[in-house]
Image 1 (cartoon, one colour):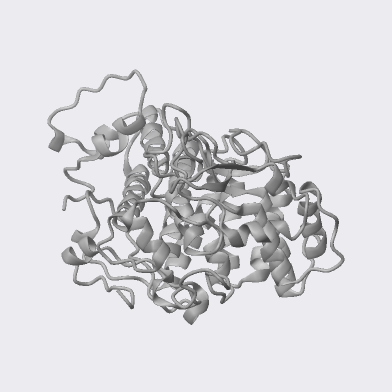
Image 2: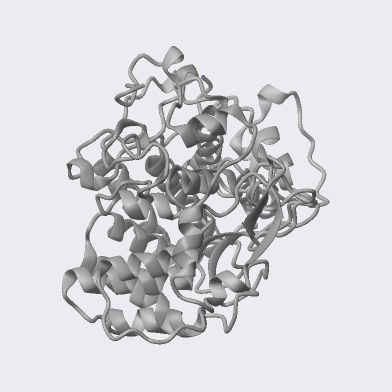
Length: 468
């Protein structure tokens, strides 16, 4: 393992990934690259950060595959595809050598490596044309990216806080730059509480130096607060969750869209943070949102609505979240199924990936206020009726937790949140009549993913999840 202050292999990992500036660099042999070279001017420093954002376009991280994986682990999606590694996850027969899960682990840590480089070296590297405010902003954005990546990772590979109050094993907390994999650090797994505290610290330190607004594909104060609201909700810190969600809702930067055409708009006020894709720089394979969810012959047709989700929408006629966002098509087994049209481009895989949007903040505020017995910002009833009004549904007269979770399910289906909403509320991932109900029970071993075999072969200090 190379030390971050000595010889490093950064240029191909960080800068050339996306950097397109015209600056010409006089660079010697690969092993002579140092932070002083890689960050020799402000444009290169900005380019290294853009490289970290570019890694977020991996479908194994924020661009579809991990989100849809969590949808078919639960009750929203009926996975019909031919990928054996995905079928294992669907059937709760996953093994630790599952190649897709190994890719999830690897690609998350690639992002963490990129951010660690920036967070550790920007404070100590002299860059003559980089202002102090821009240096602070670059570090803050890197901390946001590291925080949201660690949060995604711990949600996939560890039981939720509610299983044992967060004392259960989470993931390794890696704060140094590394190449290839994290095994050379020989780190054990920190507890879920420790991982959550690290994420919280990154976000709280980032907020003062983040911009108030800007591209929806870059970190902002609103994005950091929104992620904190989600973190606090997942930890049953309801007062804090309601407060942070309310701060985002009150921001003039965000508002509910009038209809559901916002999904692929780069600057829609509905979005707080999203992964921006296009036909040149899109999802990294055909297994992201567009490829899996879109019907054949355009996409793979692997991930249609589950019958349970169809039945949920059928309970109230005229729900625009269904009627304007679905299409019938040929599925992966040559049948006819109903597919989401949130991500229609199965050819170029250019659809943007929603990560944080204002709709979620209303559901967080509603749930957190209900469970805390508060009305911070507004009442749970008013928040839910606001979403129902946009969906073309009549207002309710009362709400309870089941109602809020059901409305959130219909708002955010296919966006990867259903699994954690069920688990953190002590609920089974599958509903009556679906397969593998016992395996999908709250706290069951395979409701979380195994630590990859390849990682454990190189690191005896990292323990495996029970049942694997």
